[in-house]
Amino acid sequence: MSGIDTGRAVFYDRTLFEPEHEMFRDSYRTFLKRSVAPYHQQWEIDGIVDRGVWLEAGKQGFLGMGVPEEHGGGGVADFRYNAIVTEETTAAGFSGLGFALHNDMVAPYLLRLATAEQKQRWLPRFCSGECITALAMTEPGAGSDLQGIRTRAVRDGDGWVLNGSKTFITNGINADLVIVFAQTDPDKGSMGYSLLVVERGMAGFERGRRLDKIGMTGQDTAELSFTDVRVPAENLLGKVGKGLLYLMQNLPQERLSIAVMSAAAMAATLESTLEYVQQRKAFGRPIGSFQNSRFVLAELATEATAIRIMVDEFVRLHDAGKLTAEQAAMAKWFATEAFVRLADRCLQLHGGYGYMREYPIAKSYLDARVQTIYGGTTEIMKEIIGRRLCT
Image 1 (cartoon, rainbow, N blue to C red):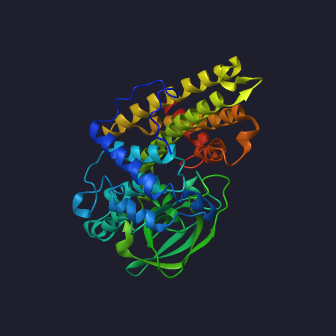
Image 2 (image 1 turned 45 degrees about the horizontal axis):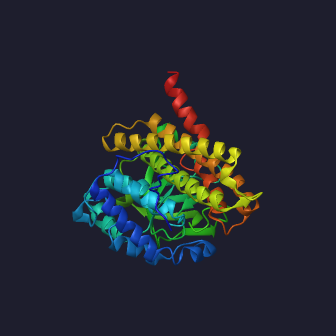
Image 3 (image 1 turned 120 degrees about the horizontal axis):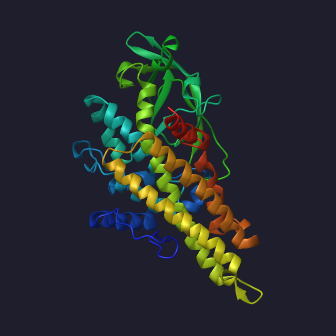
């Protein structure tokens, strides 16, 4: 396992982090070395991580860093800590850990929308790792078009009755708390959607098969179904009819998180490739000594550096409350597409060995592809940017 502070792969001295962040990074690296590295290969075979790693992460303060201390969190609203967890997890190749989904994507919903009672009920266990979370947006017939969802919640007395299904849900098998995006009033258009929190054990809430993915095999991704699930009124998150608005408000951080992941993956993948081409020989010379190899590596290092500078700057803007939806979309599509290209070209430099799963580049290649899809496809990102340009 290695970190991502690579002097060769990225020509950029980062100024994003302070000493306290680097201390946090060192602690998290130690956690990965002790609690994840010995087991992750088996988790990839199993298609799911052991829940014990969540408890250990919670015990060491790596879950809910931005949650107030009164609710068991770190009490520091600083996205740079989230970025460190994502960077180090990614650089080490531990894609089975669903911490980014938990910290970067679910936490904002609970912090911004939950009532005082809900926060007291959910956040302490969120931070301890006892309560693993998931977001249920995508459906078999509706992905990026969230207004096309069919999952429906109907008011019944002082609660709701939920019916429908979701797919491609990260942490789906392990999740104890799932934020479900559902239609609550079909006659109100974009104002007809709400967020309901479904908890493990609710009657009618079932998990389907663990989906067989080509990459990120250690991360449990599942189908979820809801059949007459009675959701109490106190599990409504935010206000009725504001669900789509809440999604739009939280998507920029989700997309920035994916960009952080891709930037880290680019640096780590390029660094391991540099090591390989200096050791592997062809025609009596290291592969890296050939002009073609140097040109390819120069191009990739330039792209990786440009992505790193862009993403770091957008993290700064986000912490200052200035990141726009268009900037998040730019970071997401530019970084993820660049990672896919880099992984492909680095695999080519490995030759036949790159096609072997025992080499890290094979895992990078397989894990890279989904980055351009989840969190909003590249095409949707371009539409968001283009719409702003042309209005």
